[in-house]
Image (cartoon, rainbow, N blue to C red; front, side):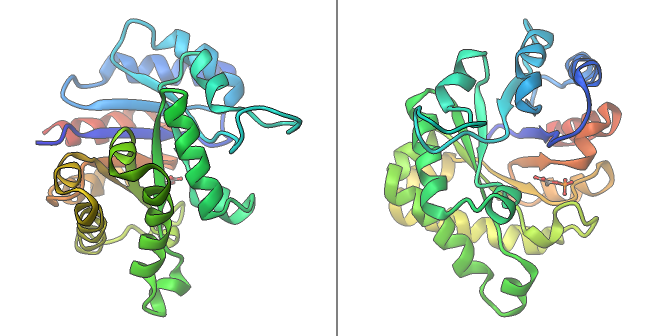
Length: 249
Ligand code: PEP
């Protein structure tokens, strides 16, 4: 039985006051039976860590650099993120891959550095609409997953988790159907099983892509969907908590 996890990726939204208020509102209503992790922008990390103090809600960073330190103006390392109290980090989000040029190899290095810093990476994988329509969805997702498995092995992967996020469903209001999501989650779990059957049964695979309070239940009913990575809907405490409660049911 895998414990559900619901993550809120706030992206580059909000100011400090909104971030703290949102974090406090989530803490006030977060159900016990679900892991809840909030991903504010870097500059709000410390304040949100303070706001969730003494609650079960955890905090993560939206990305880290693929090196431990150096002359990388504007970048933040995994150990810096750990230092301010973050417990998780998202790596390989499709916006990072598409806008900032993150490669499979770079994402795998970020994943490994997060493990070294003792924070749990959430590896995002997912295909674009063109890749899906040309029949390449599975090969793209498996290539992204394999890059990380090659670097850290199944045991390393297990210290983090995976989020299947079809790019065509992110911020578009167009969710994958529960069947489409389940099909890819099962493919992902099978790929992990080929390396290590026990790890494949324990690792959590989240779904992300326009998850809302009104579509979460059908997604969470699928056997291989262990929670959600939520973007837009995580900016509204009430809606985000509805999703968390649905995951707890
Ligand atoms: C995301 O950015 O990871 C995401 C899933 O966004 P949204 O929920 O807004 O589609």
